[in-house]
Length: 166
Image (cartoon, rainbow, N blue to C red; front, top):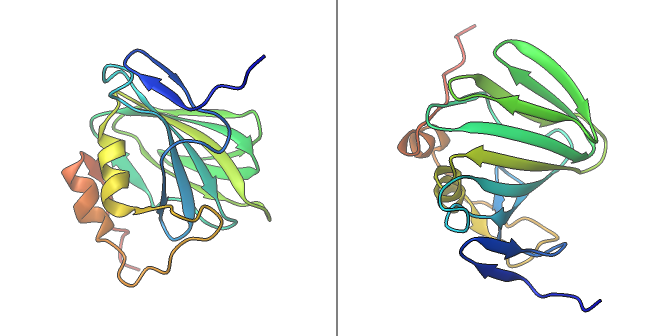
């Protein structure tokens, strides 16, 4: 069988291993666009997230879309509305819109997640704005000034609550 190149057109897609547009986000996570909202008629977006040990996302709430995480490799800890979930390879975590959630790679090695958002599109624009194009997929760029995550997230319907003062 002949190997196919990265093929994109409305209504269908093929993105091979290691392929897809990639950006560096959140201090070292390599996020690869696998299927975009444009390809799915806005139905959903799908990303592959390669997460270094002890990295993840801050607590946040999506007000416009639902999100799912499928653990491909590694050990992760998810928080969802006050619940803590330890998840290894093969685990799926679904987070409906309006739920406070976060995740962290708690393993000793890089982990990989597939992340989908329904409907699609907002996450794509968010990641494009906070990320830096991955010209080198082996090492993240040095970030001089990180973006104001709460402000950028708010533009795309995501709230990052301020932790209570201690």
